[in-house]
Length: 547
Image 1: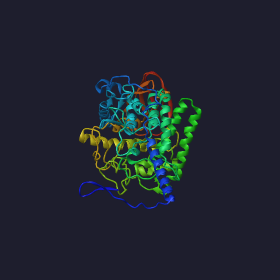
Image 2: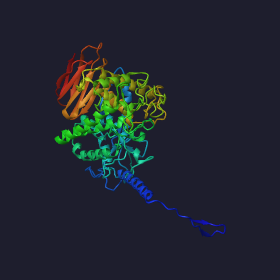
Image 3: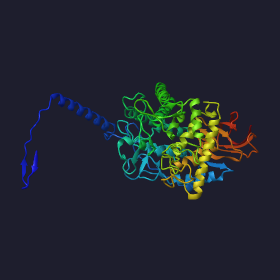
Image 4: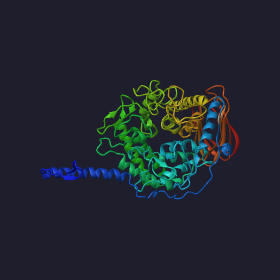
């Protein structure tokens, strides 16, 4: 070895070299080789060959104007809710904020479409965008927000990877902490199909299917840990979108359920495109994962789904992720009823503002929210309310109307909390305290953002009871209120319609409904959970009475 002596000159120091047995060298080489393979494999997951957007046909941005709220308010659906005018006020506040978040790609950006943005960062986020689309689709005639996903497809790697966060200015991935945290819930296919249900426009399916299938391949290769007994999927706190929720394990309930949801919706697209073999293939994949979730993650004693370690041992933590199997249609009716019991329990999830991200009877729970240690968030509330609908009467999956009743009650209680905080602060927030009737701590203000889901989507669908099917020019309306309520200029497919139920004296009384439509469509209507009736609505005004 060499070292510097006191005179400042280099001095060579000889050292006795010991003899090393060949077997030790071989073992060391093997360990080094294994480490090299593992490192290479990890790097390959995120290798950017420079070939982006190979599986998506749109390559260039065609400039188009961004609409202003004041010029387009009259073109949006207008809710009527006479006993809750505060809901209507919050609805319009949400839209006014949303229009501030409609954007063009910055000059020099490789983005290919206008988009909706959460607007607190110079990047776009998958997790946020998926849920902003849930309410923005009701303004699709003004701003086709579903095109926001184009920018993710256009930045997809050659191997299928799509980063959760992409910078708007240059289209580069933004990586916080490490690449393992850059996979968000895989909800592209779900968001596309939910948009289709309102717009009736299936023209995107053929264009996006190659990108979705390649992304699914990447997830299969890189979000299943080798050697586990359960063969399910993992994520991280940041990746899952539930940043500081203390989840662990190699099998995550939310991620595994989201894979089922992804495959079910890809199968749906394939069916619409008449791809029979692929329809069957992806539905089979969904069913296989669902079976393993029920086998390994369901705890019959607790009535909840839990994350797993490598050996399939359950990691018991009562958290919002346990309810994703409802939205994905994994839980049977018996399991769904057990999950419903937890949602109704004021000791855990049925708080002043439902539903906290961490159950209130967990030791880490924080009454002010502390982000995901109890905070109430729009995306998970949408997941729960839409999951409840899977087991309600209008889907035909079960005859138990209690799921729909509770979905309505939950949406109303959530809106009550949002309107009370709005009255105090004059705005909407990123998340909310479950107990203190205040914004979450911490929380971004003027957040629409996914918080628009409650005032817009849940008001239309669960408080007022409208479920459009734009693909088939049909509408389901579950009337549960007795005040004068309804909606003007609801657009789905080619239909634009106003429907108003007049005030009733009590629950159980017939509903007198006034309708004005621009064209004929089929209305499926029920009153107070009663028998559904199909009525052919014709163009122009008409009145119907429903008992």
